[in-house]
Length: 531
Image (tube, rainbow, N blue to C red; front, side):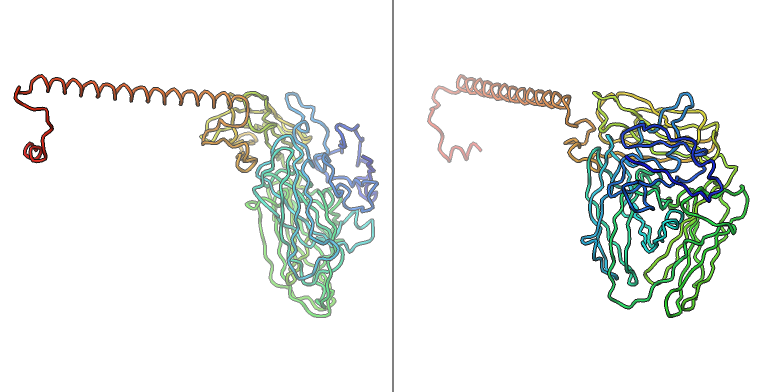
């Protein structure tokens, strides 16, 4: 793969942007060592065969193994830890979705994007989500695109609770209501996460590290006025210029932060808009972590531009993610701002999984997870517990890593061979820093969601199609046949015994009857009398 590395030379950190470009570790993969990989956003990497300067890591078919942001960190050198990237492959899922006619998407109507998601891993993906971010491609200045990206007009979750078997694909579709005012060239870019936390394709909080993309054209024959929008090119953070595609801005631990951005009404009439802000730690996709603020309606005169500001809540986390949303009728304009608060020794869990499915006694499997710190280079006192349980809650296997956690992505892994076959089980991962719970997640593996053909015929765990099942089935059949034959034999013996007893009773009756008694069967009247 031909890769060209570029950077913003006006950046204050330009002199220390890259220390080295490492040799290729795997096919179609690059490994880059930034000076502080967890404290910086991905350097702008452009594929030389493409002319689009913004989505340099998202070709029509996204690279299967591209590491972005902290995923560009070097292989961890701490003793006793595994190489995360031996197990976890960033970019290993592909999402190909498009409308029926990319050259003519009508404004004001619902359009269906359909296609597939493909899992290129040797293990299944469970509890998966697909997100889409839609850009309006109305910027032509290459420098602006490289630093600011295209304007965002929508960002939402496409699907949830998705399971995809190893080396398999599934159909996916979703509907998007095209705004009445939309017109021109647009681009949909896709992301895949697991458990609303772990990035498998693209990074949802960036505009440059994205997955597969689909360009399309919206046609509009109406006179609907253009919507009110943010001016993404003029965002400031504490009065300093903020570039969405650059190193993360750093502030001291308790420093107040104010985001200011212009809002423009390009139409010929006054408009009332709604403005909302959403603040969360890290990336904004875990709903329970969100702090939302809905502002009062704002009136903007025709052709007017006003500045709006937001005082960001001070979170007790190293990474803060803020999303601003302007709503004008059915149209949206979105900005996303992410920055670092120094002085926090946060650590994060990243993608617990198993390397094989189903679990069988004939195959060795690795139980693994990745983890990393978010600001400091080394954080002591980390504990990661990984536990596999069957449906009844019985432990299949467990492993614990205890020790330091580094900013370079690191892995914890343990190999084992299951004692029997499991097609339904749960993987529990719990991360602690000292006595403080950092994160806990349960990944549920169910055959009816991953691959129904692997489900047993009855309710037991055993029954996946392997050689041991054939012998078990044959043995079961033999036992059932034996029981059937024994039952028949007992029935025959019982019948013979009853016949013999009746015969003896009849002979005894004949020997004790009076001599003048005839053997002629009695008539009905005698039967009635006897009765």
